[in-house]
Length: 151
Image 1 (spheres, helix red, strand yellow):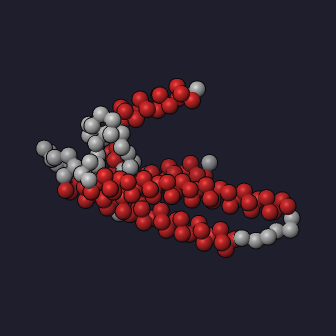
Image 2: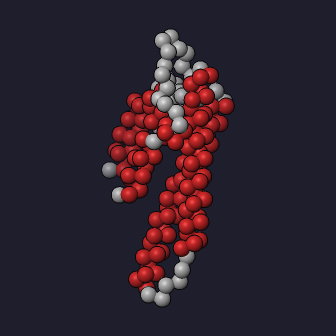
Image 3: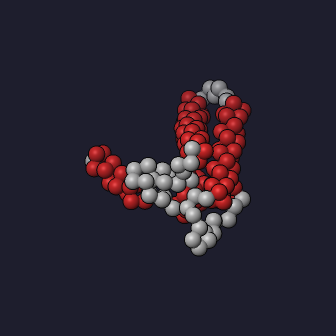
């Protein structure tokens, strides 16, 4: 439950992590112009740095808290806590990799467009999930297919 809350908080605070306001589009503005690209680079780099700090902090915590409890219940509780921290760290590493891939897409000038249909993903969707590579319609279809495949 706490992980879900942390993820929700982190999704909602991506802009605040970067210290930026939501992007204000200008009339007739070209999609993914220099100003927008700069906006998303700033968000992604701040998010990347924040995740690296969390990973480093988690590693330090695990090393500091490492004890050999004689009581099996205490030892099991500690092992369960470490297991949760390691799973969380694994998720953070995967997200770091996804952010790195997204920064490469920006450099290759193909950021912000759906990898399935090629249309614009949209500024608001990208601000909510900067690593998104599908438009909302293609993402919805992918989720429906996934549900059908998994029962």
